Length: 272
Image 1 (spheres, rainbow, N blue to C red):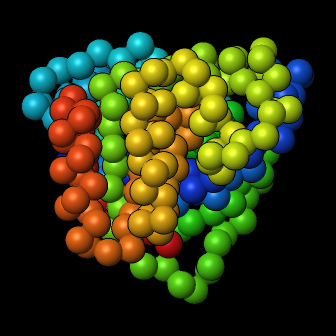
Image 2: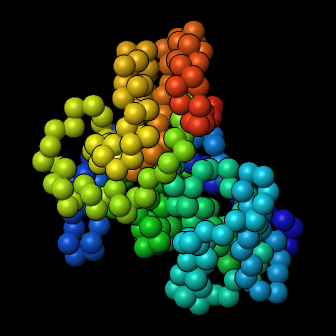
């Protein structure tokens, strides 16, 4: 088998509303408008005598992830379809881990789609299998913008109007832990409080648990009139902004670099 190259795109949540907490499956059900970014991980797949998965950071140094969702996806697939996947996966992580950009879920979706083809199993099973791997995996069925509702229901946005739009991602040095953010939201009844500063219901929880994120978000909030899009993706702590005018991009980023020198800014674009 020649080397296969799989592209796993990142995502941002343009909004996120917590509908309710499902006590049976112990997960929050959400409604969210999601778009994919050009920012992506690269996965190289080649022959092997056993299953091998290696992750690399942006400096091509080996990294170890606590929750290996690619391995989880492959084991799930092999168990369900009675296959034996013996391949080498080299995963080059360009999507920052722990910032709400869905890199792990995107990796899982890419692997599932590849395995259907590799083992000659219909890809129509994706919509049933994806939610069993993770609640966000269904988003990455394709790169089109979607509204997700609950855990596995979705519909497409603006079906005939797709194009890439410039967006900047702003990364505080401190990450948010997804489980911790959701637990805080649930345990402190944050859903009963009005969310006045953001279309993402988790923003207030993130601000209370992440001081650096709070300071940066409130700083950017003063420039809200200059943004076409602005918010926190998923459970954060990455912030996305797109500008109305190029001149404002330069001046605002100078201010960020001046007052928050540890913050990283990355240019990308979103689909939709």
